[in-house]
Image 1 (tube, rainbow, N blue to C red):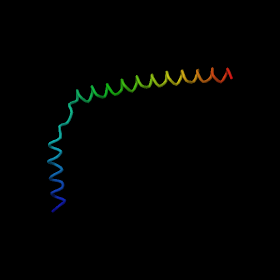
Image 2: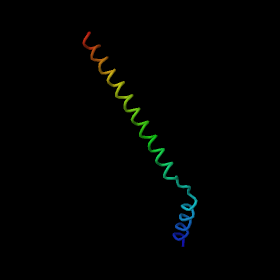
Image 3: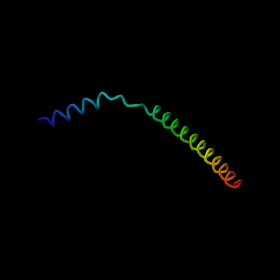
Image 4: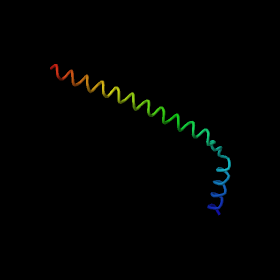
Length: 61
């Protein structure tokens, strides 16, 4: 009997969920991709600067 109550309550909970619209999902996915791309470029740029800076530093020792 408890298992039946569990699945009944589970169904009620799923009916109360407010699912996002396709438009919301598309916008938020695009935002995540853009931010990820920008952060990738930032990290790549900083890594390159540090690499050349370290190379020049070690060359002057």
